Length: 130
Image 1 (cartoon, rainbow, N blue to C red):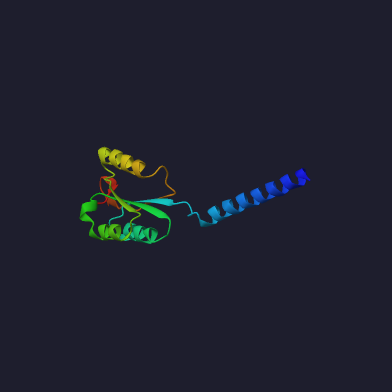
Image 2 (tube, one colour):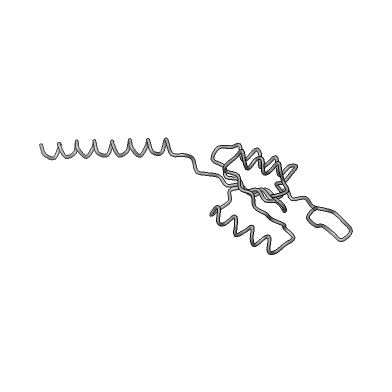
């Protein structure tokens, strides 16, 4: 009957679309995770950057006062294409605004924020370490 024939054709069409959708989902890359590490030029910050940059589907934004004076961080950037260096001096409003703009030009959201910037304890109170 014409009705049965249309049902068979429709069923085959839906199965083929479902199979195509499933194969697209199965081969699509997982969503990218974005991490920002503040204080990334050495110590714990540098190691966080190293560990995160090695993970698949991770984009890492590493911030520090002087990225041009952070050779280990620069070496990592040459190794990992998903690593971006951004200058950030947390005591400078201009630097903070510039870093915020640079980060927002790279990504629309952050999944992880790791703050390991050093803090100096002195008689005047707390201040970022230099």
